Length: 492
Image 1 (cartoon, rainbow, N blue to C red):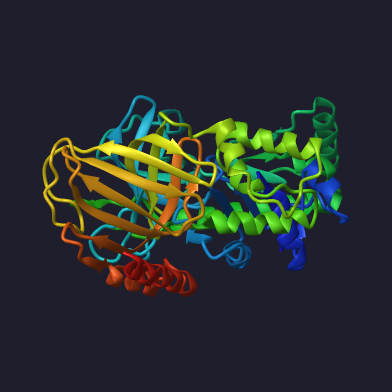
Image 2: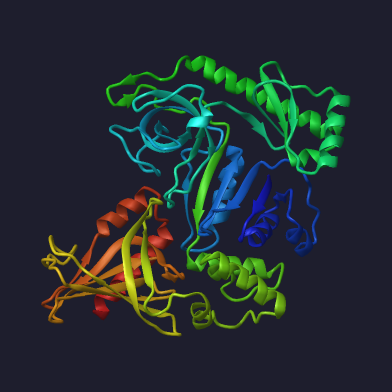
């Protein structure tokens, strides 16, 4: 397998790929400096890129290659979780416009399969997802309720609030050259001299796209030899022909039957995709892999995942001095420099094992300790009862949450206006990470509560079993969650 890797996890994942016997292609200059290896400029079978929020990576490309990558990515640590991407780039689907916005439309897509993967579930066994279709990418005006045929240009991780980007026109191929509707040839290379040389080579070889398609040559084509250029165009042509055949076989855009699309599966799926989220233990595991190739401070990936400024700070620290690999993670130094600090607002980002992210709201930081502890408080509104406690929630109640970096659980104690304890709810989760703006973890379903009368109860073991059976929580992680819950029962 040939893989292209980019982002803050690139060095660690390059080491993992090379150790597994795979090839890394189109390597960046820092990767070339750090490894004693030859890196080709060949088109990749799969591309691995860090997500915009730096919490994990997406891998997209050939289905067999992506399948192999999923195991490599989840091997990073006990709290590494992965989900299949229901809308990998290049996928062609029929959908329905559900909302029109200022610059584009929201499209409901049927992505097929069962309800266990990411995306809103519909009745029956079909799954749906939403995408964003810019008005400029379609020829005709579109309105709510219109059926549309679209292709995914860029997907989105399940834990983000982004929708996949869609296009109303179809494109095939990639790597060295992509084909899109139109005619002629375009060289998409910023270096003018290199672009002219490549154009001359293409003219000399007579590499023309088939009728009805325009060839868009990519930067890697600059370093490709004659055979590679010809093979790249052949692959793109084969992909375009396959796309044409799939669209022709499907006929018109899927008609609507009530609120459901008749066509429940994508028309074409040239690529597969997987999203991997790295928890705290996984980030430290990736530190160990990276350390095999270059100097790496304790908590390298943990700090970089926090913010762009923190990421730049890590680069500066490692450039100035040789890190001590045996030193403890400098939580106090990191929080002093980047936060959170007392008085800050901190989001509670509650990940779910199915890939979704729920923000439980913002709390005010009331204390920060160098040992990795942060205390936050929220004032509660009235109405309803507290989950698991069965105690009425009254206006003016205060929820105090104690978070500690790296701990597999955290407690929230609810108090009335007079300070009376109304109960304590303890979430069992992947190790807590305290970033400048948010506390981040993945909830592992099972919880422990302490009622006002002192009774201790354990909750939601059934939900954990169901998540384990569905493949959302790997068995070792599920066993860890149960072990933590048992220890909490005894301690409370």
